[in-house]
Amino acid sequence: MPAFVLSRILQALPVMLAVALIAFTLFTFVGDPIATMLGQEFSVAQRDALVAALGLDQPVPIQFLRFIGNALHGEFGLSYRLSRPVSALFAERAPATLELAFCASVVALAVGLPAGVYTGLRPRSPLSRALLTFSLVGVSLPTFLIGSLLILVFSVWLGWLPSFGRGDTVQLGWWSTGFLTLSGLKALILPSITLGLFQLTLILRLVRSEMLEVMRSDYVKFARARGLRDRSINFGHALRNTLVPVITIVGLQLGSIIAFSIVTETVFQWPGMGLLFIQSVSSADIPVMAAYLLLISAVFVTINLVVDLLYYAVDPRLRAGRGH
Image (cartoon, rainbow, N blue to C red):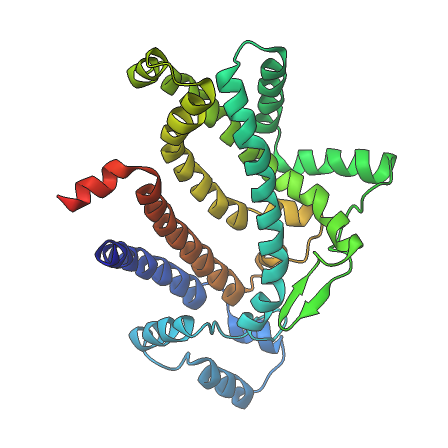
């Protein structure tokens, strides 16, 4: 297992270096940070001082090595728009995005997995047909439209839930959470459903198709011939063999939830990293954009590693193959 983890980390290093090069190119050759930070009127002395402070007077290879070193320490320079350290901005916004992504993932798994199992085991029932119709809606409608419709119904018409913001939060050290307040929990409901709906329908349809295929396999027929109970066949044999492709999709979709929460955070004005990124794009705040690119790449690399490890826990054939 340690050798397997080390090999996956070594495979991820070239990917992260390539992403770092793209981020550095964006950081170095797009826009004019001096004009952005100093404005239209500045003296030569002010310009030279800022150039030296940002390290722009050094050769490009040295700048790249310095960029990687700073990134490894979580330092990405100053935001052009806010003149604050990018790491501090991300530390403030990360709890909001991670809590939203966690709730959206829980919604997707808690509803999508059992619904997929049910529709796979009872494909002709009226409830299965209703769930499949619902899944078509979730796959077809864009995220911003789903969010707008939920706001219209539950915030404007019914007045049950807030339409924007994060509600009241509680500070636990550097982490701010909305889980400990009623307004924070209510504010999470609509954006969590909006962000998790596409993943929910994707998991539902994937689990259903895998369950239908597994239930037609020979070893399930043999298990029935041996007189095993339906519960043992459905959950001990069929569902276990369905989980390998499901883990892949769920893992990648978790990364997608964090990376593409941009639209949901914009619709609900959720104060997370996605909204910060959109605001940075509109003002060409390159350090924030480069840091977001590196962070999301690290998230996907980490999730891929976790997914590979989960394969070992679910599929014994992989452990046997490594043993030989």
